[in-house]
Image (cartoon, rainbow, N blue to C red):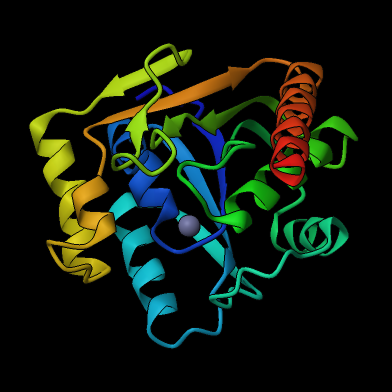
Length: 224
Ligand SMILES: [Zn+2]
């Protein structure tokens, strides 16, 4: 059999379950990927950490966890702290592809998702992360009107087969143990969509655009 190059993919997420919710079907559909998952929070969570490592087995992936604060108050964390943790956890390799959160997150709202996205894009832009391309998750919840849905005009949209979706749903409900009526189980997207960036400059511009919009929203809220 001829030697086949396996695409080196790293998925960088805030929480155990984000890798499954937002791109689990894509991992399951790409068995020729060499996948590594970096999860930045909950490494010392005795309940959730083992579930994450069990999930990695279903994906035949490797991974590592950090222990960035994840309290319910969602206190903002310095960018530098997240940068440092990503660089500490990530193997110093070149990756063919990085997948991470969207600058606007996937729903309204978890600040860690936004912070992780910002750090990853900045580290790619500064050359501290080496990768050929970057995808960010592309989901929205209509400002809390509905469960997160794939963004229709995103660059990449993978419709999962029934079998793949079922496997993903089983990871959420059985391995992670989320109740059938939970946000996670009810969300579990059957389509997975991504914004694709071929250069760090494109991703950087998207981040700046988002930050400008966010600032405009904040200012208009202050003026009310
Ligand atoms: Zn999360």
